[in-house]
Image 1 (spheres, one colour):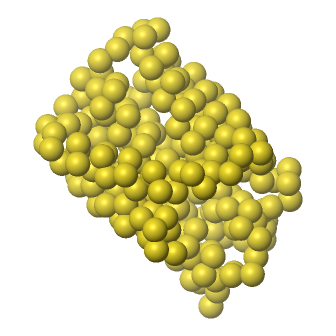
Image 2 (cartoon, rainbow, N blue to C red):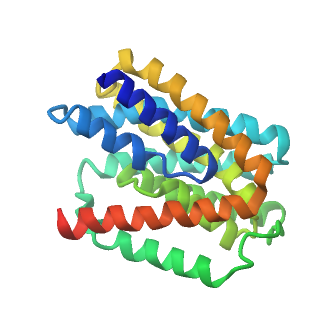
Length: 252
């Protein structure tokens, strides 16, 4: 029963994550509820070992239908990998607890801005070209990558929002691009967890398969319905993140 529960959670996480990020909202709580006595680092390692395959599959699916800006995104992914590794190291010497009460407020600002700017992310009009775009995207990769390694909740949503707001992508292109960046940050975290022995490999494969199935379904839905659909899923996920992080910060 435990295996079926976490496998279904991984499938649902892959579905949500492939559209707009936020799959950790589903899989991480399911792992903690199913294995309450297990070291948190091990459960985070299991989550990463599943989600990295879902984000990689989503990237592959998106690039078949969406023209990803590889010259911009590959350096940004490398920056994200470095940022995530640095953040994972930083959390070993600095507690991230100070972010718990700040995060819901930041997410609320993202939500309010997105709702107020109804045209935000509807048109794909990149603001930068050439080296300027590479630098801007790499700054996003490095900064959010560091946050992912250091703390984590909402990483995919932050990637999408900044690609839309700062780089001028529409929600569909931003979601597709965010998957590549998130794959890089997941890889950095997974390497760290593996080196520390915090991955249950006997769970990794079945959860990865379930995550990939969910990712395939979610990506197809996003490609079918376009940027408007992704925007509303983004709003729903950010709203849920606000509730979850507020509960963790102020009520738990």
